[in-house]
Length: 251
Image (cartoon, rainbow, N blue to C red; front, side, top):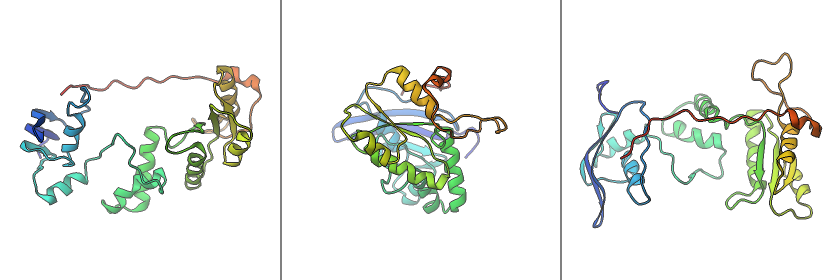
């Protein structure tokens, strides 16, 4: 593919669900490394358009080309595109019996035949980009609809054995029952707060458990410390980060 050719090209693409014309004569070129946002009301075809890019949905008219490969009924062409097109679904679609790291390395190792060490190194780099790899403190909601806080804590603690670092976990619950704090500590959590949590109470907990930098450490290095007294809360730095602007385009 030439350097000036689009990475993704929709050329007069249309798709129907029965009589419903969900994608109508789509013309769209996406350049290599370009970031775009496809926005519109519910049912307007956003997910359908994206799913067409790796043939999770089939278009009935027009041409759809990804990295120089046109998506048709050619199974080999579809497999080639799917090896190089990542999808982030609206649902997590993770394997529940695997850790986050194992979920990330599964496809590179099995489909891309990548060595385990290389796959794990790349996965950790991606986790660090979104700051999942190295939390300072986890605030754990005990009551969640799919995975409760006790199960989530067990997953985190199991994954930490691979990484060699233990992150403090503070439990949060809106319905404090007798024995809840003991259950949280037995599950591997380090602290316990009953909601609604007052701002000063939260600051105190974070100040007690957030890792501190110590003299002689490399820049950015952090070490776990024992809980600090409540007076330490006033010195806790609070930081808000704004995401860098992205290129936005509507289709």
